[in-house]
Image (cartoon, rainbow, N blue to C red; front, side, top):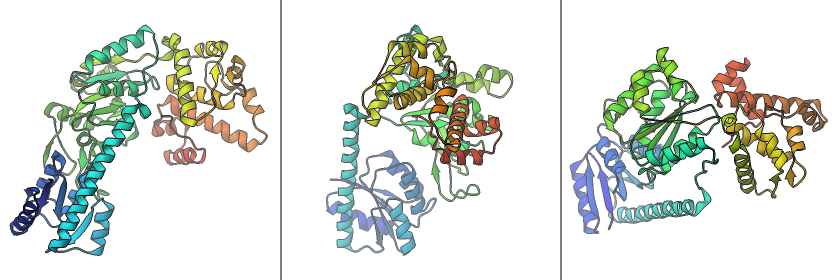
Length: 458
């Protein structure tokens, strides 16, 4: 039978429910407060949670919110003597299966428990089937493409370091594929069945980075209307990828260092230390040692993160890989969009191999997709590259761009779109830095992204 957790601060209620459920053949656990209920539900092995609303330390709605944020699959039935329609609606929106009033009717309780357990089994089966689909290859991890000595060294290093628990620091210019290296480290590790949680430190305002990483308690600051589970907790049992770690504030660096040292975190506004089992992989396009000398990055954190260093070189330093990467991207884009097959002529690949690719693989992906869409023939030629790609820059040539438009407004929008895309690529899609660079407000740039339908490539 199933294991059911009863969370209620009234011993008499817990005892009554235990007797009923054990008579039905279920195994029963108990929790007398919200913190205990949350911890036991997160620990696993629970098939159903019967959750009271009014409890000490943390009320039932906060527990439900926390489980919702943690993407828990444990079905929850709320039980309360103080229920309202508004509370029931809110509980349902947060994923509660049902809402029972105290004292619960025996028949209604048993029917609800059976239905909730059935729903939980369906969720588990659905999760299993999704994993089967992933294993079948519909969501395969993108391979690290290339046969240059640099790529061979990276793959060899990943193979040796991934099975260990050593922390890894990945360096390289924007667009070189640092995120992909991190995913391969996770996929080849003993934590592959656990979560891989990615955080772009450059994309999160400094005043919110601590809440993002460590979570926060309800009411801990203005706007904290609900409890939030941070990325460290979400990555428990898996890998936390801290991208652009060099953009993190010194205050946040100090707290990350303490979390790495103690394997424990405290939510913003909280007073409870929470144990976390997380492997951290970090990446940066900055010179962290230079930042250490300038006292903008903590030296002790640098040494904690850089047990293993993996440097991903730019495309201009491994030009022999460009043709293979371009062909791989072409096939990937065609399959994803259901497009008719096209191929690269040898002279087109030669042209691409001579460009500088300041945006690296990310820029190459954009150009390949552009050539696939705009070229007329089944084979993409050197003439297509000359027409749609500026030598050394990776943007449309002036003649090719003008020929494509009859309207000044269409030309202006396309030119503006390409300009913004280029600047975002140069800043690794950091919207704040790009807005500052081109001299407009961040909110204005966000509006431009929406109006011009600009999205960061996968």
